[in-house]
Length: 373
Image (cartoon, rainbow, N blue to C red; front, side, top):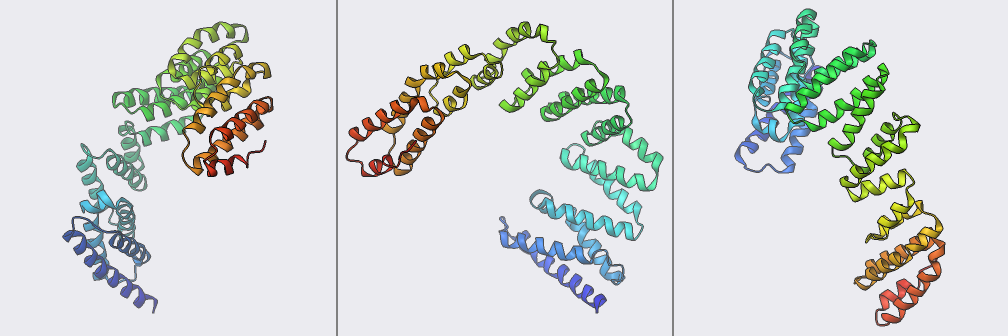
């Protein structure tokens, strides 16, 4: 019964998939129902594809169907996850039937096809060819690996192997070669990843000067989120001798200021440069910015910012026009009052002013009545 059930399932999948392909061919737009149908058919095809008990003619039909999928632009462009599954199914059949030459021919064709096209598929099939060669001919696989070092996946494996073997000079050389290739192709993401690995390679070899210089360059060459920048900054700071830090800090401050306002605020907070931080915050027009950075100041310095807090809160309530906006304003008032208890008296005065100014806004009056510190 199991053999018969698998035959029926395989025949049913092939027949239904043929109908689905007809629908796809006839329509400019394929709706989600057809895509869901193909997704389910792919799942069931995977259940029977490795069954060697299926009749030879049925296995040939399955193989032919998979071959059609693998050259169908629709699946390549719009259902790549199905395409990937079907490739995996086909490799199972090639392996079960020991048709490695067919498998290799397919990979060579795909590599040639995408050599000047999709980088993703070009690299994917190059990696697949190397994996297959490893099972067939180790020497040929090693030669192919060396020739494919311009691909990030191969270079990453080589770097990982060098690190595992403790060959850090080789690790460093591989990374530097990879950075040059990635920069030529303007692959900034790959460059940034390799630079992080190069920092590790320098660290493993005790090359503090080189590590320090690279971290410094990374801070100002790449576009970073604030937390990433400050993480690099802290790591770079650790490479500077304590007696030299004040001098280096003064040199880097102007460069940090040029990056962005927020970057500079993070820098000032990190270095506890409270007078400069206070001057920056006195010009702030953002309540969230004040709430984030003001806690780094002394209570006396925070008091200097009171007019700024009140000004922003007053502007927000005067421009609020819905219950949701009123609720947000009350939440902001509570947040400020609880974070800075020294402001509570002034905030209560602002609250009374707002109540008196907008007596004909019942929704606002109701929300204001919920304010508690």
